[in-house]
Image (tube, rainbow, N blue to C red; front, side, top):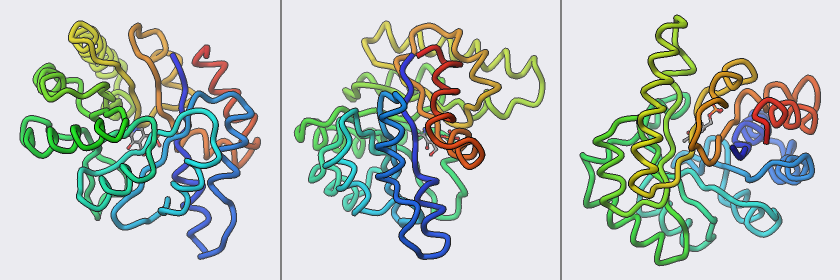
Length: 237
Ligand code: PXP
């Protein structure tokens, strides 16, 4: 299982006072030195954390892999095609949410997602859909021609009992197996942390986990390199 670090909240901290520090690009380069497999950022419509300059600097300077989380809107698709991340992960986006609240509903927007996927793939960008671990969503993603799905792990992460957590893990296991049979790559993320990753890492068939908040929070206390390497030890990557 590979590990990509989401650095959105380095930009959140920078933007809190309208200052220029800390720079997300510095975090990305330090994380790469610590051994991450890729860098993830979400360029939101309201630019609440990552901005266009960050994305362009990352494209220029990182040497691993750039995963751009994005809504399927005209403006952001154009920026993605221009910048050329290795992977574009399509997420739903609501202005009022604190963070992404769940997967996209592929079945509701087949034509829009087909068009978005074609445009991104024509620009040599692989495409991933952030979805719930649901067979119908997976089938529709494969039909449209996505390269990857990213399974939303928020329900697993926020489970209020061991039983609920176990049930969701089994649902994710079934989804991973189904997606692999259809030839899709499988990533996962949202709410994964230093505790729940110990159970999650036992799942087979997941290419990569995308983790942000927990690692950036830990970095405040122990430094980014130590926080990243602690997570890498737990993932076993
Ligand atoms: N994957 C996706 C699609 C996300 O939107 C997020 C949150 O930005 C993450 C992974 C990482 O979630 P977290 O910050 O909770 O680790």
